Amino acid sequence: MNKIKDIIEASIHVKQQVLVNEELLKTIEKAVEVIVAAFKNGNRIYFCGNGGSAADAQHLAAEFSGRFYKDRKALPAEALHCNTSYLTAVGNDYGYDLVYSRMIEGIGEKGDVLIGLSTSGNSVNIIKAFEAAKEKGMITVGFTGLTGGIMKSLSDHLINIPSSDTPRIQESHIMAGHIICQLVEEKYFN
Image (cartoon, rainbow, N blue to C red; front, side, top):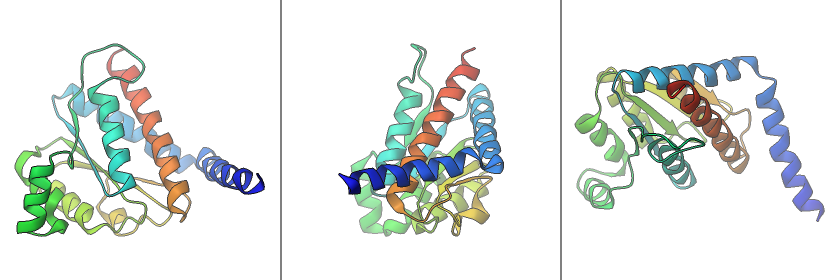
């Protein structure tokens, strides 16, 4: 029982650090503004991640394209890893490092937003996707851990959770993502 409480307390501690980090809260607020503007301009939001972060990317994309709190029209958001034929073909033919960047090269448009989730900030396939997005004039939002890793320099907006513990970072990524989904929905459909 104590171990369970310790894990819950660790999660709460990271979220408390997010709560008092004014710079991080302003970045989350800015991400909301950027996404609302993108949707209003007819642009799309793309998500990418690996492993648990891929699941989180898919989850957050679904909050936009499905619904969050309100019954409303679908918003154009997509997780880039959901086409397994594409993913396995590009992974096999070109290498896994290029699975997201090639997709961005094919479908990304100026003004679209690419959100990449990587607890280390050093996932090569996400870094390459951010580089491709920058070349196309897309906006990049990085969800990372404490240091931001290499993604720090490639993110227009960096949501770097103040932790180096992967599960605690991912828990806070979902929290930040849900905040963004809720506020985007409120602002866009208000």
